[in-house]
Structure formats: C-alpha cells, structure tokens
Length: 142
Image 1 (cartoon, rainbow, N blue to C red):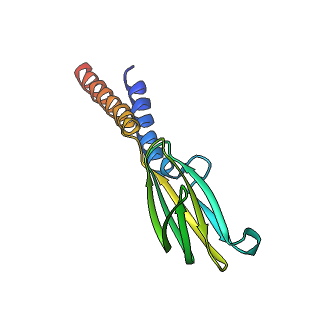
Image 2: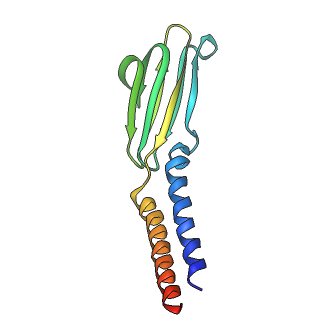
Image 3: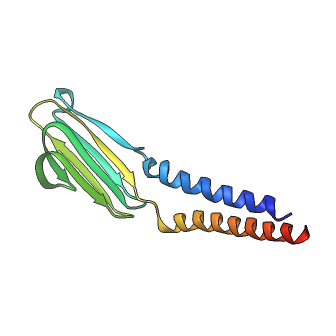
C-alpha cells in the first residue's frame, strides 16, 4: 500500500529535477533561450532590448563585428563578445550601435533557485525512503 505512493513521489522528484536541469535554465521570460540581433540600415545600425531577471540571469552577447555596447544609458565597451549577470529583480536596457551591418545573438540562461532544487530532491528522497520501508515491511511479512 505504501509502495505506489512512494514510487509516484520518487518519480515526481526525479522528473522535476530533470526538468530543472534541462528545461528551466532556457525558459527566460519573454526571451526563451536568447534573441537574434541585426543592426542594419533599416534599424539605423541600432538595436535595443530590455532584460529583466526573475532568478539570476546570465547573458552572453556574440556578434560578427564590433558593436558599441550600452547598458541603462552607460557606455560599456566596443566588443564582439560580452557577458552579463543580472541579479533577481534587476533589469537592464541594452543598446547596441554600429556604423555597418552586424548580426549576432544574445544567449540567455537562468540559474535554478535553491528552493526548487531542494523541493525536487526532497520528493525524490521521501519517495525512496517510502520504497525502502515498503520493501522492509514486505520482507517481514514473508
């Protein structure tokens, strides 16, 4: 009688941990796993994008040519690659400028909150303990 709920709990915990480590990091609200960028004549060689973090957010910028990078109005650098970390509840407004056509990508991934990892691990462990207890009870009956 204890075996089935324990199997369900441990399976749920395992699946939740798998989801957290495979899918969750790429589920950045409003952006998914990143954004393609294009600076061209139609955009006046400028690209603007806001980023907001609900958990700790990592951003990586890669472009095929040098761009001027600004965050929240402050000049950061001329670069083709740059990495950011945005803390939870923070937001930044990024502007890229160039004098020629540029393409590239922002890649984004979020860190897994400790509470969510602990929840998945707790479900898994409680289920495994239940399986162990169920096994001991079954052995004593026979």
